[in-house]
Image (cartoon, rainbow, N blue to C red; front, side, top):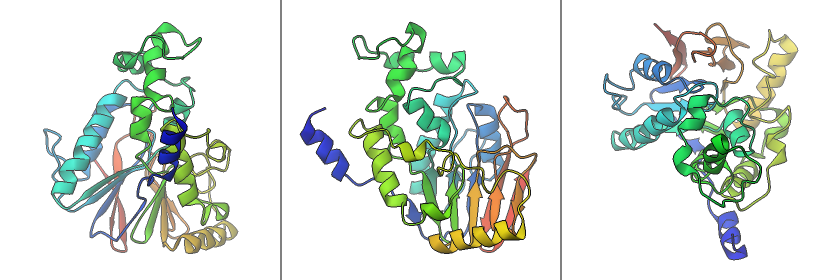
Length: 289
């Protein structure tokens, strides 16, 4: 990549991450390559019909990341969700897709959790002499697709890590006090890296990063924890936080609804049941079968 192109990418506008309140918002957690579970969850949320076409009207759908890994249907899921983005926009709604830790892991070359079907789905992106080095032949297409500057990495570059819709913040892992005020810079760094124009954003690959932390989703929270969470939410100007990343037996909440956990392990790898979270003003509820 030329220095000029790298400079242009660094100056380019990273993905939007803040939107006004919507009458109805639906959050969908980790789907990990399970196309059937994804389709079922979208139907549960009243977002698609039997043919997978958008029926959500002006609803805003937020998918909190981890489409990739553990299942064979990743590419089909992304293609479905990307198509729904256009259909939702035409209907006055919106589909917001977030990067999770597994999206960033794939871009960084960590393919430990890719299934055989996940490797096979991206063989069409293999390029001879693409500088992949010692990557095995059966993994080269996957690596070429998601390596920084690759075609699928560039698509991931358009997805934020954090999103706010009205008074609700959405992120894959969680938000901490250290993250307040850092989101725009974080998005610029991820955008440049995924486009092949910047270094790996190491701040996104540490234990307390927004895509990795389990601060609000692992175990019960104390009154002190809730007070800390309240300060974090105030720093972001929101009233609640929606997270994925940590499998729950069902959609759960803590701190009187200040945090909602929407990763229910719905992918076949975990054996959970599809569910989504519906937010309508101050009314928040889990929608299950």
